[in-house]
Image (tube, rainbow, N blue to C red; front, top):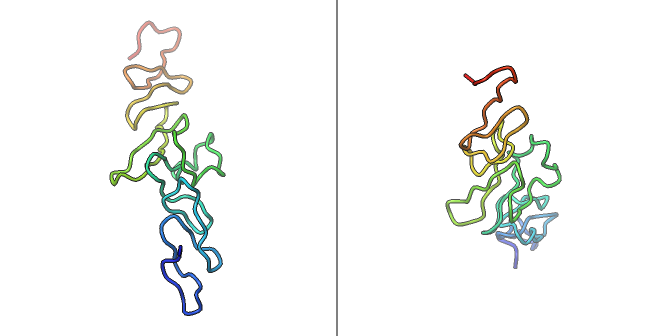
Length: 133
């Protein structure tokens, strides 16, 4: 019943949403996945979950083994973007020098050497300066 299409011998060739093809049989994706790849990693999430996608692979605080997972809350250093079609969204990385953020343009904390001013991270003044340029 999970097969979308089968060959003449009854082996699955493609699977319905929520399943992935493995050795001619359809296997269930993780419960929070809408779709997943042949290894069972989520490609999209069900509503209320956010994908830790490959765009996060270069962030040192995201474990490579967690890529392809759907999470209820995006981890620190990332922010949630909802899907326009009502499906689950995706976690995207905050832009440097933001340490944490609520979206692509609003920081909530900054990396060392920067301070937060109205949602933007700016360079700290050297101690010998009275004002910054």
